[in-house]
Length: 303
Image 1: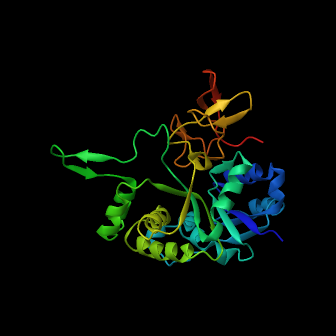
Image 2: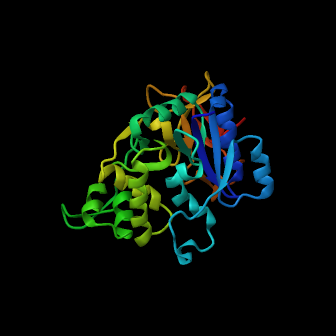
Image 3: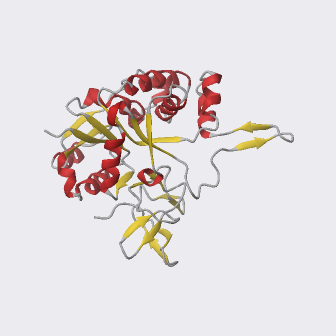
């Protein structure tokens, strides 16, 4: 019986990305001891049949917190913003859960081991989106002299979601937490705290981003015990491009000591000529090598 599971979700449009994520996991021999579970938010029967030979379980995602249809507008994939906060309900037979967004892929198995280790003793394992090379962490609009209007992602979303101002202020300049990769144990109290905050964010704000805001509130306001992992454990390419190590044939951080990227995450997309690399795999961009050369490469997983 496998004790731990990696979980992701997709609809039919993002199935190719989900399929690549699964292949990136299964390229490692050690993955045989870890289950792979999928939440279906609109996959076709053909797509699900293809996955059956690769994964351990597939369950249909639900609206675990009731949301008005006027907010959903037929976008069933938005269930991902709710259902990921209820993973033990969908897949109750595991001790630890590692969520990875389907627009991410695994480049180093040690990162998987780190996430499972990080959630020991009911802690949250997660990565903040801040590190060497990040030039802007919060936006402000300067009004008069020293007066400014805060435009940080956390604060902006909190205000839009009508979150209590005390909570919103605590988030204002806190390093943003990306919920695209995280780990939690089955019986961690963090699930309930996160779910309660999610109910609050869904009431006043948009569905998209609600679960991420709720987790930021859980960490920075409710002080759930958290193990913060290095940036290479959830490398968001739209924030900072990696470099390529030609000697070892792998993507690495762009600054010394050029640690290997553990999980490559294409959140927000990589755009070229108004086309997103997540949708069009033929898109390639200029990537610098460690010895200063320029390569045209895709950032998607290649088997």
